[in-house]
Length: 530
Image 1: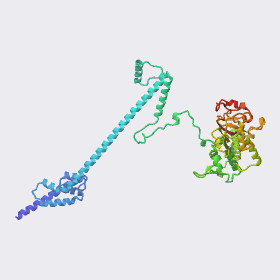
Image 2: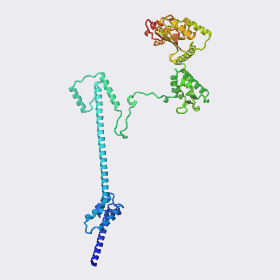
Image 3: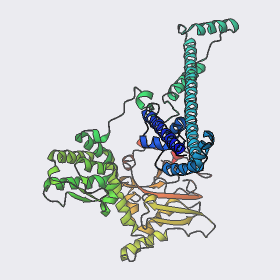
Image 4: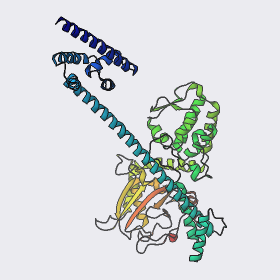
């Protein structure tokens, strides 16, 4: 009995030694694969000593410190099992439920990662195939356009009778085939021009390139510029890039027809030149009433100030300032001399006269009897005498409305508009008497009514219903009826400043179209009214 126990102990020790040596060899084998010794030991315990399954478990992420618990459970189960139990049953029991679940999760994750990689590769291959297909399509389109362009150019060359060598063998064969199958017909000039226009449109349409992908290379576009479309066109230099001298001369020439703007600018520049240290003359308020009315909107006025080194104090500010260190005597002399030269031009002189005439009309308009508060006894008697010579005004519904404007009707001078009804057989002197009753002697005297041929016709009586306006000779046609003068059934007259030809009685030099049609039945032609 003792001998039997001794034999069992010896056998167990031997088995333990052999098993320990095998385990150490397996651990060393796993270490040679690049795994940690402790994790390799745990993986061997979890797989019952199977090196292949242990290596698979380590690759899937197993064999960590959590497997120690599973190893203890496996050891306890092994002690309770029978010694003669088969190795396959022992291995299955040793793995446990948790190990299998962990292995399944690792396997699913590996499969999903493999599927993602495959899907990415497939998507990339599809995009590459689409890009290659699109590039092939673009190449085909470019070749077709180039072919169409060549055909159009050949058509133009054939129409103009120019000898041109074929660009390829295929084109030569096509021309020979066309010549044999169809008789060539001469082209007209319209067909040649149409071909040229088609070539021009083709060139303009192909100046830009389109790309489907947003890349730095393919997204570049060639913009059509004026140099491409009109190579022989020369664009004038900007005003700001011209010399100061040319800027001042150009701006002064533009503003010459605005009398008040010229006078205001000349006064400002003269004051700056005389008193350069006085900031009062070097600062301009753009909100000033006179500046707004006469200078700000005049073409070239503010540009002239900028050329004289005036500048805005702040962005959007309503003041222009000329700094003391920027006062240039040469520029001031040039600006003043340019404006003085503009005062000698015909545009300035004529507009100066019109401005003075407008002031006179505004003064006389205030003398209108209907709005004048009081007048002298002499003025009252004069107006009553004129009104006594007027015929009775026809009742409503009969006669024609006669309207008279002082100056331009668009000026809307206060008191400068009067209206009254007249019959068709009333004469022009009746209208003049009514005008004298409204405003007195001044208008009639300056139109030369009572002075005869020696009177100065500074002002004239114009028929505004005709174009161009026709001045009426009140001495010659004073006793003509309104019907004869074309002022019936409606009349529109205006007091205007006389031209030099009309004032000097040079009817031959009048710049009026005398071939206009007469207004109304029985009215005289324009040629008879001179």
